[in-house]
Amino acid sequence: MIRLYRELKKRGVLGLNARNARYIMPRNPRRYYPLVDNKILCKRRLVEHAVAVPELLGEVGSQYEAGHLANKLADLDEFVIKPASGSGGDGILVATGRYEDKVWHGSGGRLLALSDIEYHVSGILTGMYSLGGQIDTAMIESLVHTDQRFRQLAPEGVPDIRVILYRGIPVMAMTRLPTRRSSGKANLHQGAIGAGIDLVTGLTLRAVMSSRQVDLHPDTRHSVVDFQIPDWETLLTIATRCFEAIPLGYMGIDLVIDQDHGPLVLEMNARPGLAIQIANDDGLGCRLAAVDRLDNPESRSAQERLKIGLELARDDWGRK
Ligand SMILES: Nc1ncnc2c1ncn2[C@@H]1O[C@H](COP(=O)(O)OP(=O)(O)O)[C@@H](O)[C@H]1O
Ligand SMILES: [Mg+2]
Image (cartoon, rainbow, N blue to C red):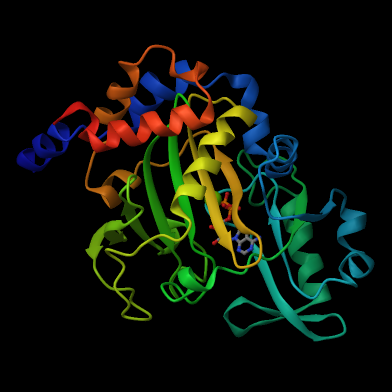
């Protein structure tokens, strides 16, 4: 145990306290929190900065509206409903097609009647899934159809790509692959696979599921290591540009790849989890320290910040 701890420390693995005290508190101005903690506000801000996102199809803000969704959903054959202030994949309802008038196909072969959806939305509004349990808004979002190249790896649900930006510089990335166990969601604690990504090449490095190392996707037996993430350069460029929209010093950007619209930003996160280090078999500490040796990286353009991140990665964050 002590050896493991020493080993992790040597690799600069960051713990929760250090993340909060050294990086989140000093680098994330509180005034930006409402913008990232509410997915509707975040989306609006990203659109203002010409960052592509899944389309917002509607909002539901009152219990009265929640009980009368028929009109709002009348023209929508497929959609996703989620809590604007949700996290961890909780409270997300996915309708993948229409079964009949007022009934849709849900994920996992389940049928969703209008009354089920209204009940779910009503729960969202009471704050059942929101960060501090406060009253929430439900958002209706267009359904992302994963790019074919990516879908072969994770056939159920929508895999996403998480990029950590520190002071505007991309420092670590992973892809999260839904499994049958995670009910199609890409959140690790729901049972999805996390695979670290080589920032320079976009190839997956190694993968973990429930903190255990895995090489194959449990549902498809497809190898999850050495997989080329499609559109890697574009994904990194978009993630790096998010710093212009909301300049949080330490944040996680979640992206997806849509078959028709290409890479889209799903959400931004002011307190990204630390499991990304296990998926990459490397600590963030070393990488963040390398960025802290730079002089005012925030003032650089997105293009320059991306270039700096890739150079640091090639240089193994100053360890070479
Ligand atoms: N519009 C969408 N289309 C398809 N799947 C989605 C959509 N939005 C979310 N998901 C799935 O749910 C997961 C969590 O969504 P996200 O918006 O990041 O919320 P959370 O804050 O709960 O993580 C995503 O990684 C993806 O797998
Ligand atoms: Mg997320």
